[in-house]
Image (cartoon, rainbow, N blue to C red; front, side, top):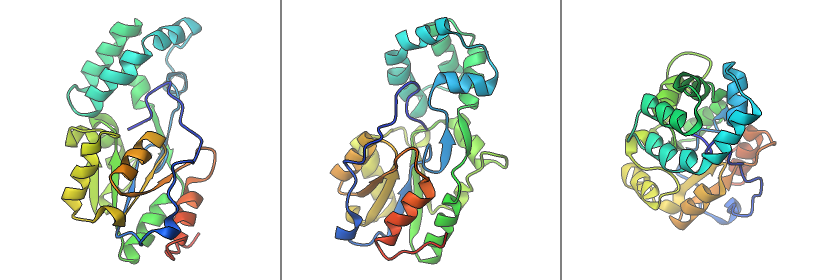
Length: 237
């Protein structure tokens, strides 16, 4: 559900559409990580949160294996081809870090819900706008975000829920955007999509969706609220 570990999030907003020039949305779709819920940026952050050993030597091993971990392994995990145990063992083999520590770090990867985004979902529903999530994620995080507890996102309030591990596809694969369109029946230009990664927004734009790239370091709630305001969809602060 995340930016691949050790891959920085783009802080530019060059690919953001200008919503005021577009028709009002009938469906608003949210990414999860860094849009609906805060997440760790790096393995080091997750290790500290999980209280497992992290040293410069371990960091160097993760850096050396980054292409494999963040590429084929993470994609296989987030599209449901391997489970959490298999992913942890594979990363352990790449880094010589115990699989139990890998599992603990990945469990610690998600933090707390982004403040106020749940109010935006409620406000959109009151306005008659359907809502959805579209996330690169996996069974472990999905359960944590769906069950009662500190990570719960009230996902059942959304009209549609698209998780990569269930769909078998991940962003920015063009086919996942077509899958969403087919399942929702909404015309592409009436979909508004919030994501924190340029590649995912670009792929959505190529599918004719409207997009707003969330910029890190700024309140997510205000970015979403200000975008919706351009469509005369006012969500109370």
